[in-house]
Image (cartoon, rainbow, N blue to C red; front, side, top):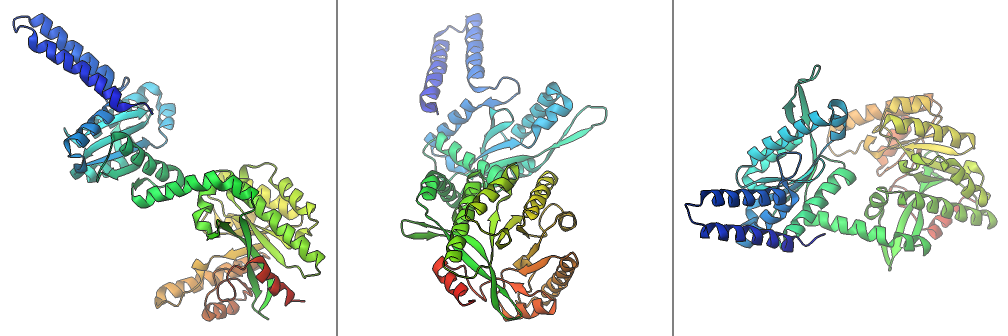
Amino acid sequence: MRNMDSYASTVNECLNRIDTVMTHVPQESKEVQENLQELREMVHKLTFRADSIDVYSLNYFFKDVDEKISSGCVADYVACRFDLRRFSVVNHQFGREMGTKILNEYIVRLQKGLGVDGCVCRIHGDTFAIFFKKERLSYVMEYLSGATIEIEQQYWKKITLRTHAGYYEILDGKSAEEIMDRIGMAWNTAKYVQRVPYLFFTEELMEAVENEKWVENVFEDAIKNEEFLVYYQPKVKLKKYRLSGAEALCRWKHDGELIMPYRFIPVLEQSNLICELDFYMLEHVCRDMSRWLKEGRPLVRVSVNMSRVHLGDANLVEHILEIVDNYKIPHSYIELELTETMTEVDFRELKQVVIALRMQGFSVAVDDFGVGYSSLNLLREMPWKVLKIDKGFLPEGSGDEDADTQKKVMLKHIIGMAQNLGLECIAEGVETVEQITILKENNCYLAQGYLFDRPLPVDVFEERLDALA
C-alpha cells in the first residue's frame, strides 16, 4: 500500500502554503483572495473527494483517522467497511445513470446521519469506509442493514439497499492503515467466510484469520509429507452390536500436535484446497483397504466425505473411479457422503453426480439432511442408498420434555419416510442408551457415535476388524 502518511503530509503542506500566502495578501486584494480560496478548494476536492458521487475519497479517510490518532481522541470513534449487496443488479435493472443517482442518495443520507464528526469515503465502486462517533453506531447498523431509497421508475417506487459490513470499535490504533486492515478483515470474513450481514473486529477474529493464512501456507507441504491421517469411526448394527462399517475422518498431525478438523476444514472449504484433501483421504482409505485385503482382514463399507465444492468438477466421478480402481477396491465397499446442497443450481449438479456414482456401484449417502435446498425433492429425485440422521434429531433427555417429544415425532417420520423409499438409515452422534432404545423402537438399526467408539487411529480400528474374523 502507498505511504499515506507521506501523501497526507504533502497535501497538508500544499494547503498550508496556500493559507500562508492568503494571510500575506492585503485585504483589499479581494480578487487574489478569491482566486487563492478557489485554488485551495480545488486542491482539497481533487485530493479528498471522489469523482462521480458526493463523497470523500479514501485519501480523506486516512487523513481524518490519522488526525484523530494524533489528537488522542480516536478511541471515541468506530470505523467500518461495507459494500452494497448485489448493486450490479441495480445498475443492470435501472441503468448506470439511475444507479449512480441511487448510490449518491444513499451515501448523502448516510453522511448526514453520521454528523459533522463522521465521514463516508469511497474505496472503489460500491465499497466504502466510514468513520464516526461511537454514539452513532446504532444508527449506522440500522441504516446499513436496510435503507429504502425512493426512485422514479414506471414500475418501481422504492428500492432497499443492504450491505455486508465489518466494524471496529476503536480501542487504540497506531495508524489509519492498521484500522483499515481491521475493518477489512471483519468485512471479508462476514462476506466470504461466515456469510453474514456484518461482523465486528475482535482479537479472536484476528487469530482466526491468522490461522487461515497459516493453514493455506503450509497445506501443500502437509499433503506432500502425508501429515493428514485417516481416523475411522465405527458404524454399528444395533441388532447384534457388531461392526458394520466406518466413516473416514481427517486428523492433521503437525509438529507432534494433533489438529482437529474445525481448525482447518472450514479454511480449506473456502477454496478448491478441500477437493485436494478429499481425494487424498479417498486414496488413503483405498490404500488401507487394499492392505487389509492382502492381509486377509474382512472389509466393511467405509464412507468418505466429499465437499459440495466438488460439484463444479465435471470430471468428479472419473477422478473417484481412477483412485478406487487403481487399488482394485470393489465399489460396493466405498460410500461417498455428500452434504445436502443449498441452491437450486447445486441441486441439479448434485443429482447428476449421485446418479453417476450409483451407476458405478458406489453407495451414496446424504449428510446434513434437512438443512438445504429442498429435503423432500432431495429424497424423491435422487437414488441415494443411505440417509444419515443428524444428531440434532435425537432426543437429548435434557429435561426439556416438549423439545424431546417434538424430536421423537420428527425422528419417527424421517425414518419411516426414508425406509418407505428403500433407503438405509443411520443415526450419527449417538451418545446415550436412551437414544438407542428410541432408534430401535422406530426400526433404525444402524448407528455411530461416542457411545460405541470415538474416531480411531487405523491400527486400533484394525483390531475391530480382526474381531469380525
